[in-house]
Image (cartoon, rainbow, N blue to C red; front, side, top):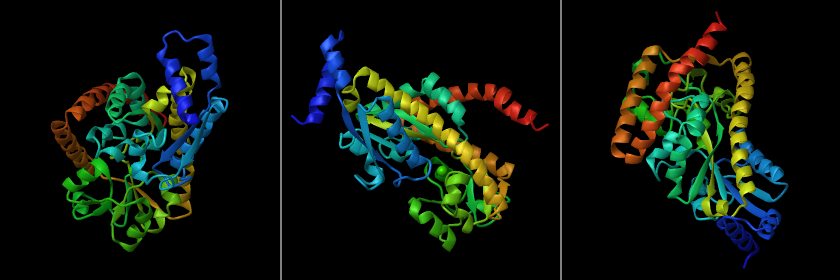
Length: 360
Ligand code: CA
């Protein structure tokens, strides 16, 4: 028996017993776990990749070294978009990515990333942790032998970089833009052409004019990518990704093999990482935005209201069609949307009203 399998089965046995004996408890307390984490990010990718590294280190430190996690960048152990399957079958014990990458597995995964005109980070965390969202996400991933954990959030993104100004809906007609997921579907209905490109090709495509526009994340990552050198018009707000959740997914068998205290450490470390990424983006986006404007001559502009209004209407159409064809999406959206409608009433009186008040 390999040492890891032995350790795993020992953990399973300990959990299976409803009343743990002293000896099995102390054996579980001594067990050590060497895990692999496969990620969808290039190694040490700013914020997203570095947060995955930090999560692994946090788990190791919180567990006093009982869980050690080796983090793999995209293509080191498996290609970026194989991370989900590799973790599902146990090639790695955990993975780090974005739920909407797996929409080919089940379209409902998209609701756990971000929904156009959907909830902000603060609202979505309310839904996940205290509004039934996590239970639905767990139900969805259960059939893939995985347990999902929210592990980061970008906050509201930017609408993107445009080579030309956007004055009206007419300017979206024929626009070739790198914009993935549901947002891309919305652009298509507005007359544009959504393009899917790997990260490494985004800058050169925008610079050469192969695409007219791209969204990416926000000031910090966009600046690191050099997108301001290829286009100067930087539009807001990121209607398509108002608070994108990043994820950790853990192989169910590997998780069941952990003693209860280590299971809790993994879960709580992911919660801490969720908050930490949002905080990091808040700090770094502020600084980067200033550099983009003052040093690099970037023009920051709002999308016109009538453009946003139409995109919102088209988003509702796209979501309606999605929930009409996929029963699980319908179930998730019913929960998501009822939470959002309530949250918006409160957010209007709290966040929105306060942000307005402090500028009066
Ligand atoms: Ca994005």
